[in-house]
Image 1 (tube, helix red, strand yellow):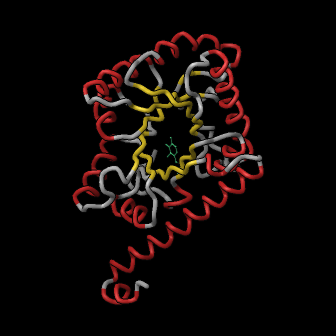
Image 2 (cartoon, rainbow, N blue to C red):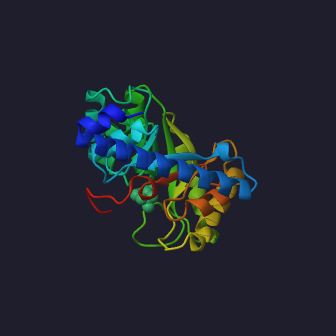
Amino acid sequence: MYGSLWSVDRLVKRDMDGIEDIRGNYLRVLEQIDSAARSAGRNPATVRLLVVTKGHPVETVHQAVAAGIRLLGENYVEEALEKMQTLASQAIGSPGELEWHMIGHLQSRKARLVCQHFACLHSLDSLKLAERLDRFAAELGRKLPVLLECNVSGEQTKFGYPVWREDTWHEFVGEFSRLLELPHLQVRGLMTMAPFFDQPEPARPYFQRLRRFQAFLVKSLPLSDWAELSMGMSGDFTVAVQEGATLVRVGTAILGARDLRID
Ligand SMILES: *Cc1c(COP(=O)(O)O)cnc(C)c1O
């Protein structure tokens, strides 16, 4: 199908190879999500696959879009904006077609940019940041969907609400209920990162803990929507899906190793 292009230009051939590789990886991850969901008695259609493009050049994002990927995640606001602008200038992914989620730690001073350019923020971790986002979202006349990032492991290097001790959970209800009153934020659920292991299985207790915290919030703040659980990355998404993930954030397993910067 790509016959003429393959012969004329090695660059184009490299692009086509890239697209095919990404497409193959993407379909394989979708299949793994499918069977993990079924193995846990879940409907696979309730799990969305977010492809994490941080650390990859815009050419790779272009290939991912050509491979049929529309839901994209980035960690750094400036890096993401650069890619969005380049893609827009090449008329790739017309407005509304691509859905960008901000999944990395967000500094307050970049709150406005997130309101302007992202469909969802996974890493809300303070009332102060929430209030800033709410103000900018109001100015822009929109409601910003957000997830509350939770540190379920106690690792110092992780961001998020420190919820690893279950006997402290009641302490979060006050702050969360204030956050839920902000009219231009739409809290949809929770996000976490498990500690890094070289096997998926050891991550399971951390995903189970986030799920229990979700159940606690459903009971404590029942008028709100806690449905989304953003959890699972390349190394552990299968167990995350078994434990209830509705959004998995996968980079390396689809796009390969990152070369722009190390996180
Ligand atoms: C980088 C990153 C991912 C994707 O990690 P991979 O191991 O490459 O799949 C997911 N979530 C967050 C928050 C990240 O920073």
